[in-house]
Length: 200
Picture 1 (cartoon, rainbow, N blue to C red):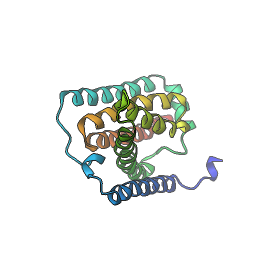
Picture 2 (picture 1 turned 45 degrees about the vertical axis):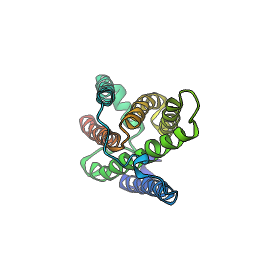
Picture 3 (picture 1 turned 45 degrees about the horizontal axis):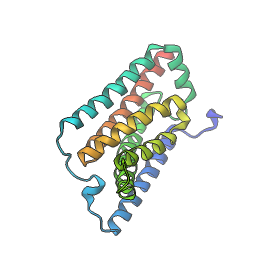
Picture 4 (picture 1 turned 90 degrees about the vertical axis):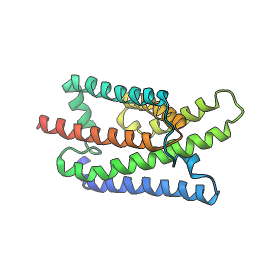
């Protein structure tokens, strides 16, 4: 079945373009509603020590997961084989994957963090722990959309998504979360290329 799939670059560009269309729809509806762009996260981040702590937590969690995953070579090789149809396995594929990483980092943060958290904060205003629910619900929906990577990955993505949600909430900006998301996708793609070369 995998052999019958079109080249991965088609998948990377198609998914990237779908994410761009989704983000453009969100931004269009936001603009039509005449809402302030800074509420969507188009603003410079507020400087706060807690935001720095949250960024460090996200980075350490991600890097810790990478180190732990690479510590069991056989298990990691199996994981790469299972999702080989959607990850870059060589430099040529990685070059096309960069487009998807940039599109996902930008557009998924606009949709899941900027729009959904802001919208749910409004919906839950007046309810106890409204900020908590506004962060948790998008984190769960974003994580479930990655079910093709397995339940363990979904759990890890929930933790990262919650952390990114609070970074967005406290900074009032999409800048940090977009940069972190892009870096995570690019590093993960690059590691899959390196590990794939080692296995051949």
